[in-house]
Length: 330
Image (cartoon, rainbow, N blue to C red; front, side, top):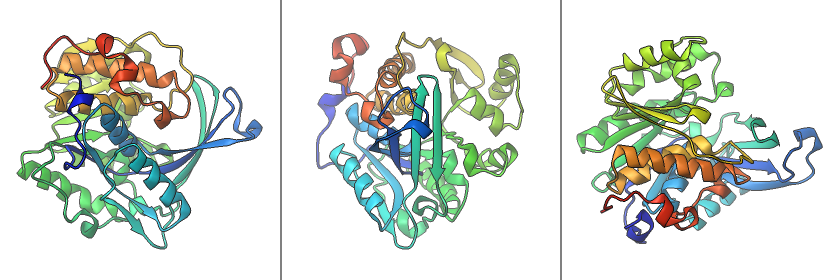
């Protein structure tokens, strides 16, 4: 059965994502520069939060460990997450710190303009107290965000979350989630995030993110693949943009799945759609090949919709018969 039929309200989450939450304001007019925008649409965002929303819409119970300010923006994103069915018990409120925000415009499908407002945001100020009471005995995957290592007190709790997950037999996934504005330099990103990947089960990222992680500058694809294959990681999912997605297992390229044909409107959410789909499919018992194919379908659907998280599909919206692999899903 497709993942949507497995969802049941009132149960603890299967996946917990950790890191950034945003209130995104998208220019409602498509094809205009920010300076030309007249009206904006408010939408919840932030890569780990988006990934939880994707998984939830595909039928997997998802929660987010993050924080907002004690402000109206925080109330809005919390309500949007609740409306989407995401478990918000670990969306904390930190008085005196602002909710992260961003404004975005889409002058063309492959050109985006964005500006983040993240001066001491609440999600960067979490401590071990905020991680108390997590449902370790119910979780199957903990997904951590590279951006969560950028600043504040949140980076200090990430190693313990990873270690605790491993002790409970929970898979640890990382989304590299490079936001250049969060870092003083590409090297500072690599220095902070690379050591944190120790013993990760799955690492997901774009070519640009892996190049920054490994401080490679601007490598050719073959140079990058050699460096990524040399990482001591069980599985790497390398997002290749319009060329699709590659799975590298124990340093060996296992498969590459092409992207699906799409008429993009807004490409901002494609990467998060990919990661969330992989989480949902793997937790639903799908093979890696089928999971990657689903991820490409979901990403293709998402980029044809405006406003990122508003465009994440359910299985029904994808068209269950066409999108579901032929294998039995438990």
